[in-house]
Length: 252
Ligand code: SAM
Image (cartoon, rainbow, N blue to C red; front, top):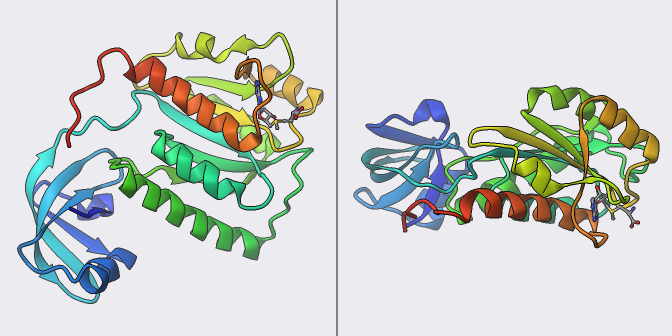
């Protein structure tokens, strides 16, 4: 059964309405018919099996057959602040980070980021990146559609830190706390922001500024990870820490 996201306002426990690009996919690509069933999530944690009752070029409506009690979301909400990487690495980071349960992402520019995005390029990139996140969320059967916020400066990334239960800056220099130290001090529904440096890393001054703003500088283990690997390590550790003990019964 295909899986789609409906806007939260278009999702009730009786009926869901799908609009936008997915209508074309349902009507023209899947050539779905009334009576067929699909999975629908509201992107904010609710999912259901729904039966198609109305299909048009503009919208698809379905009645809810069963609300699902899926446990596919990380118990803590992990946001990845990613130093803008070169090339198409951001697409990989977003796709794998979504599969691994990231709650949200935002790119940032810092002293050593090479990539500069002008307004036009940024809008185009955000549109493509959000499509990748949505497709990865559908493929991994998530009920939350991770948010991808627009790029910010390093200073704005530090300012954003106070909205989170815990905040960390991944720094490979010796002496940092372990990521486990941060995760083991958290509980379900807490939120965590982790800043990952670009290919050139963070300057010592940037790490000092982050620490002054309450960020803990954490090690991601004894090896130097590529920028696109680092966030996957963080999310895998969060999954292991919070989902390994008694994984909730999975809906298949
Ligand atoms: N300084 C690195 C080097 O010598 O190659 C360059 C930065 S690394 C490629 C990109 C980012 O990944 C770093 O800024 C850091 O945020 C994160 N990172 C990579 N390995 C790490 C580790 N072992 N501990 C903490 N952070 C790490």
